[in-house]
Length: 117
Picture 1 (cartoon, rainbow, N blue to C red):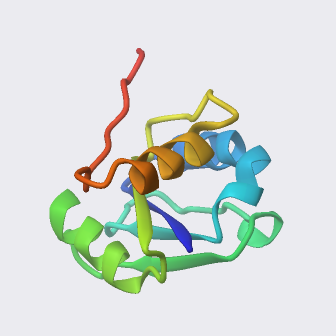
Picture 2 (picture 1 turned 30 degrees about the vertical axis):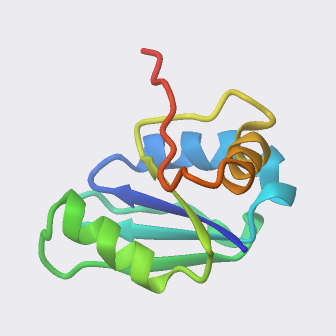
C-alpha cells in the first residue's frame, strides 16, 4: 500500500494545488493523510473529490517534523511519500516510478526528488 502524507500550515490554496496535481495519479496511491499544523487560515477545501483522505488537525503548532511523524503514524502504507503543501507533482508517473525504484533497489530505503522553483 502506498500513502501520501502532506503537512500544511496557512497555505490552503497551495494545498488545493498540490491535491489537484496528484489527483490524476490516484491509481498509484491508496490514501492521502493531511496534517494541518494549527493553521490560522480557514481551510475550506472539499476533500470529497479526492481518494481516501484523512485530515488530522493539530490544536497547537507542532512543527514540520512532529507533523510528519503524526502523519506517518496515521498512514497505512508500507511506502509513504512526504510532500510539502507548496509543491506540485508534474510527472504523471512519479509515484509509480518511485515505488518501482524502491522495490527493485534492495539496498535503498529512502528516495528523494528534485524540486523545481
